[in-house]
Image 1 (spheres, rainbow, N blue to C red):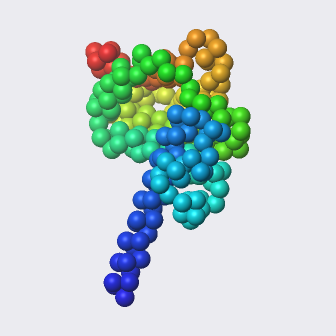
Image 2 (tube, rainbow, N blue to C red):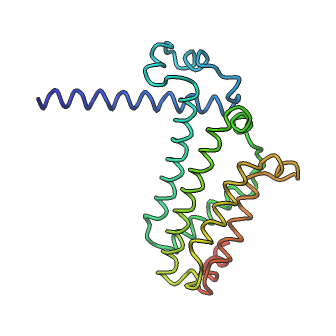
Image 3 (cartoon, helix red, strand yellow):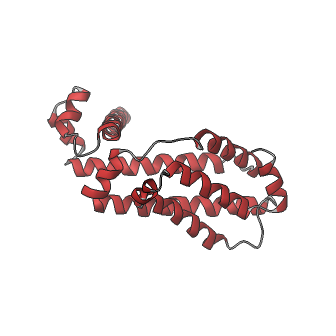
Length: 215
């Protein structure tokens, strides 16, 4: 019985690895070429896999897209959790600054993938936005609570409202990317500016000294 359990578990792991491999490969193709121009046949050729095998894991291209978006949210949530797991607000701020410096000159525009999501997969796009908002809101609340506990965020801050406000800015940037780009800006620049304003606005006097001394 133990051997049977091991075999079943091992098979499940292999199956999950293959599913994630399909999601990763398809995601990279969608990012480069757009969703509409990449077919299931294209994905199967890229992977050297039969369509029969593809349909073992996904009932349709729509399901693949949904799973790809969920994987993206899980990745973002994982990165946020890594920051919170430091349990040291000073280190969290320093890592945030380092990340901001790496992206502040990013001039990339929104990839075709996002255009296609918004136009051809509005339901999946809307669901993705809601989940992104909730993920970011949760992170911001925990981020602020940690900062308050360590004396680096203003204790009188309305945590819930602040989290909603800035999570809305980020989720809205994905939705309104066309308007942002029409004004010769991009989402990376917006994120950098919004987060700089956010961080400066929530920090205590001691926290602001820490922030400004590292930028």
